[in-house]
Image (cartoon, rainbow, N blue to C red; front, side):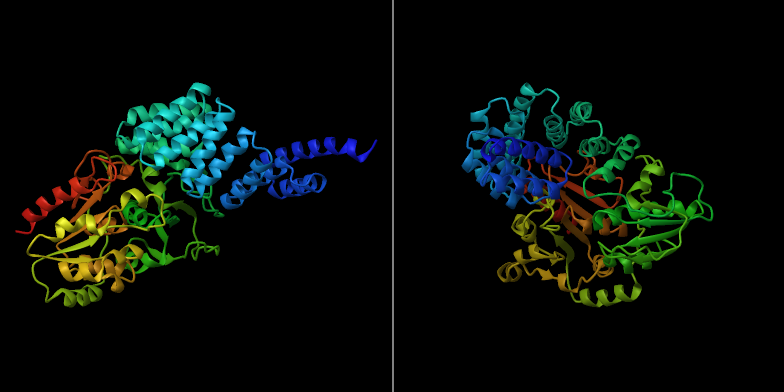
Length: 495
């Protein structure tokens, strides 16, 4: 038999082999198989497509778009090529190109539910919530058990404040995929938002099954709630600074149970946490440090698992503040800094980490706060750090006499000392509101309409921080109304 006659069968076998290797996430093998195909049939569209899908799985949407785009050039009639090209383009932020690719996929095959889901995701990204829901429902007409469509509908209901409907959608998603950690976490957020802490904390434990969020590997057991007298328990912070500040309150109950508490935190928190004597011993570790913790310990636990094991509810939430304290010498230095300033003193912060996805809706701009700055008799201070601090231009600084403090805020101890000398902090949902709340300082927090579970729903106060007041958007992205409410409240407060 000639090579010409055997080549197609060989290519077909290799394509099936590469597809199975992709399913098994064996990306090195996919590459080898694809190279064998291309050696036989240069420009083979299936080989290019499988390489692109492998790149997508390895979080390389740029390479995926390039490879799948080449596959489309060679075989424009394959709907799944266009579908996944659209997904790669979406991950690259090329939303118009992604939408065109998805519609092309549907032009070739109308009953592609994944294409409707991804069109819904594009609508969601454009804040077109009603249109997004329509696309998700359209997907379900072709595949009634599609987990991603039910999950996304759950998120839409969750953000709209309809938690029972959200939970019903998450339940349908879990029928389709009972082990989907993302859906369990969506369910956890809805339970916590409506104050069902018992079920919410239990569901929140699924966070360690999310991709790239595995549990800490320790050579001793995880604490499961057993008696603690004399036991050395290693506790470690997780997620963001705000989470560490918020959940640090749960260490005191362990000490009351007789535990020897060993706390690991980020370096920026070390001085503050040591000064506050939160644990028997406190050490810092940078993100990504793979060295064993500098403790001998009997048990371990991530900090955010404490409320679950302590059976925390809204009725028994540890809410006594302050539970953080400031070094008197640092506080005295900041007292001298503010000594000459007159009037009511208000700190401002308007954005968290601009690289964080959640910050897109949480953050406002300094210009959104201008109505506050026009009130008389108030001295304003910028505590904003990072690139958003650049919004405080020289012109704005001069016009409103805003005093920038960020360059002196080297860690949370310094920021805490500054807050001790301010009459009020006004901020969006960032770590600094947790710091002010834990210090017992007055703080007003601006929340977007789909605010996180920790702020519950509709309330203007929070059981977590007695000194905090919440000002909520009623329309996603519209800060005018809560800022107007703040203006009136601040005018009354500063008189």
